[in-house]
Image (cartoon, rainbow, N blue to C red; front, side, top):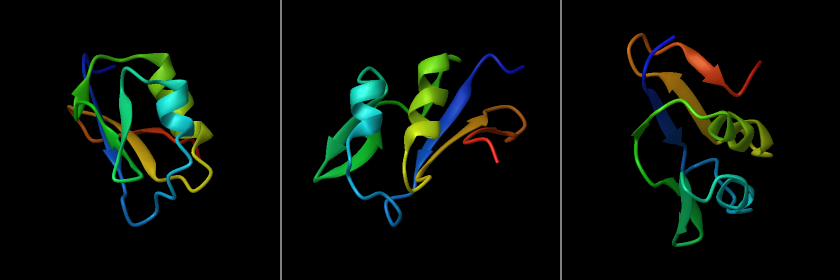
Length: 75
């Protein structure tokens, strides 16, 4: 497993529920009503997966920063 993960938010899909910011406020914030990662590359943290899995429109992706393998959301 990589030492770093890459967080992405698809602003076209995001509906601004703020579940991610509530679940992982150290990793997500709302900007103009939409989710945005506080940092694009982060150390692995289970709460980031929880936030991605809790997004009702699957706007958040978590990928291995080394090989781009999808970590969350789980299919």
